[in-house]
Picture (cartoon, rainbow, N blue to C red):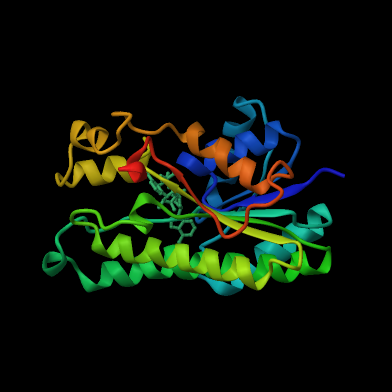
Amino acid sequence: MNKTVIITGGTTGIGKATAIHFAKNGYNVVVTSRNADKETSVIADFKENGVDVAFFPLDVTQEKQVESVIQETVKKFGKLDSIVNNSGISLGNAILAETKSEELKQMLDTNVMGVYYGMKYAIIEMLKTGGGTIVNLASIAGLNGLYATAQYNASKHAVVGLTKGTAIDYAQQGIRVNAVAPGAIKTDILKNAIASGTYDVSSIEAIHPMNRLGEVEDIAKAIYFLASDENTFMTGTILNIDGGYNAK
Ligand code: NAI
């Protein structure tokens, strides 16, 4: 029986590359997006990339929706082996006194509560079938302070805390919980930060000792490794994939 993975926000950026990687490795892949109207175009887009995926509409800030997508996935494929809690937003990009309080609340809702709901309802299903794996999207911003990023820093530090604590909770029940901490990766989130005028591409490249931005596949491969049976003894790990950023 093929394994099954849910990738939240799996229609763009890192999530999309990760969905393709899992599907090419024989997984049943469920991708989610807030916009139900995108189902046909998303499925067609993955087909063009040589893979089939299932699609569910999901806003990760809505607890009931997260629970229902996880239960529907189990109904459709028999069980849930892995979840990648990838959905995330980055707003603001200003120094603290110039940020908007509402933006922090929105980031906590999506980046923290969304990950919490995804883990909670996935674990409930995984415990029924002997275990599973969870990979959360942290960031270099979850391990360090970055300029004009304190609100996003707070949300991603919380992802690190949720990952470590949950890994310990379920270490003896067959559930491995890890996170990746990417450096700056070429996706829409980064494009928006650059458009805000706070950063430019060469200054972002330069923060990485490898002096380049990351590609989505750099992250997809590592997420797959952490979720798959290739990873046998890592749990509670926050894996740096950052061109050397955290080696400094
Ligand atoms: P992206 O913007 O392409 O992907 C984020 C996805 O989350 C989008 O598909 C978006 O529609 C979805 N999303 C946002 N709010 C949602 C909600 N309430 N419910 C459901 N889905 C929602 O950007 P990217 O870079 O692929 O981001 C993926 C993850 O990687 C995010 O958690 C981000 O914080 C993290 N990350 C990104 C880095 C980068 O430099 N691009 C660096 C480190 C971490």
